[in-house]
Image 1 (spheres, rainbow, N blue to C red):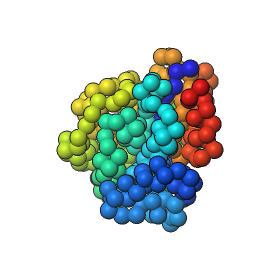
Image 2: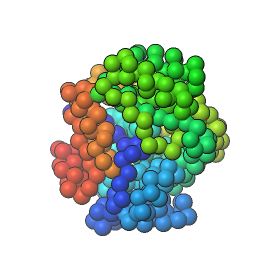
Image 3: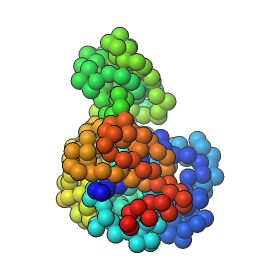
Length: 314
């Protein structure tokens, strides 16, 4: 059994996440306390108790989701898991790539929390509210969505943001371009084209100011080569050099999250089991739709951890 760990992205947050981990494991409590200290505020209180609209803010959701993921990792490690000997690769969806890199030792936990707070604020500030938009296109092939985006870009920037697999592709850009692309996609056979309730056009060229903010932030952070290779979002291939990883994280802000290709890469390179560590089961569901030869398992709470330890340590 060849194992990869995957880490969820924005949208997987829910009020109460991590609370059962904190109540059951000292290692999880230590993670949440360290993140609170790094950010200079009680983010854990927002995670455990809400309100939901505060947790959903990009600048809060990103470090919060990372914290839950790393809490799971630290508990598994306390129970005897050695990442380097038991896990072949790590990967994360968008902000989840930072969780993956923290788990693999490229960034410290405190630095990862601060990087994600900077990232969230920079992404939110890059584009005035109402200028950008995102839409989910269901049931069209990647090449067809690319063509639709290119045509719509004549009236406003539009590109693929996330290729999530299972027939789901998210587009992003200027509102006029995205709305035009959504209409074209429907005309060309998409089952649905749904405008998403997001606060900014993530993973589009409009995020260029945020990319520059991350270039500066990443340049000033201590980095180490990861203990295991990370499958980078924008490359859908393994990377092991810390400086190269940082450059790809800058590119990721305006680039495409190639998740379908990431799971396909896993399937084509001997990975049999993907453990999704953290809040929710989004990536586990996507894995099933992308390649049925890969087994997806979500690990988010105490009961999941016991089962995962038994399997991982077998």
